[in-house]
Length: 249
Image (tube, rainbow, N blue to C red; front, side, top):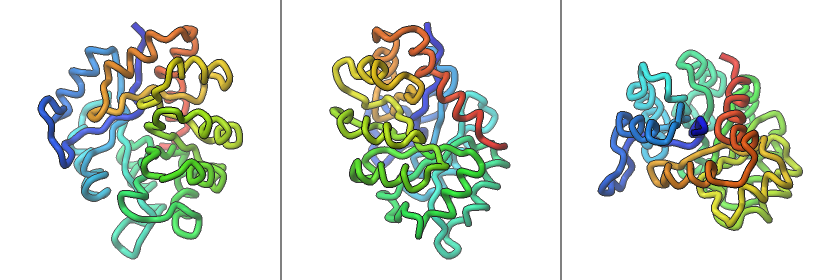
């Protein structure tokens, strides 16, 4: 069975707790074992639904001593003394072994344009930290293009791109070589094969989207596809390993 690294995993409970929801890291690790997921990039629910600083702190506490979790912090542009300055964000992440960041501009109501977030993105680029953002935090495909084009030195990972995304996504990826795509919710018939046939496999990252989405479905979509084994391995773990190897610790 192919080795997987999950590039899109959230720990901690959200505002809605459904029957059967994953409630702690032990349950997530057990699920990872079931599907041969070696490691997972994880951020905390509280960093999305409550406050980035609180959520990042909980993430560090709840994943302490567990090397299979690759920590991802939520970050925001500086605002007075409410959030750290960009250089402080990067210094803290380097000290705590954080390997990527998550952006929530819609959730927390801030701009990603250079006038507001330029210093933050410059600091992230200098540290080699990739920035992950879900499509629903952007609001439009044009906003995704603007983000990637405005910060060509940064690496961006689009999460949960959604159904029927290719006609928007492909021209943006053609124009923006700094954009990668995570595969949870990449739902279209033969979508992975179609994408790789025309764009190659080196800019796709396997992701599950748990706890909202199914790890079983995500793993099946990749492992049962008709992609070549070399392509599957790139998507499964090779591409995310390469990106995270560029982080300066």
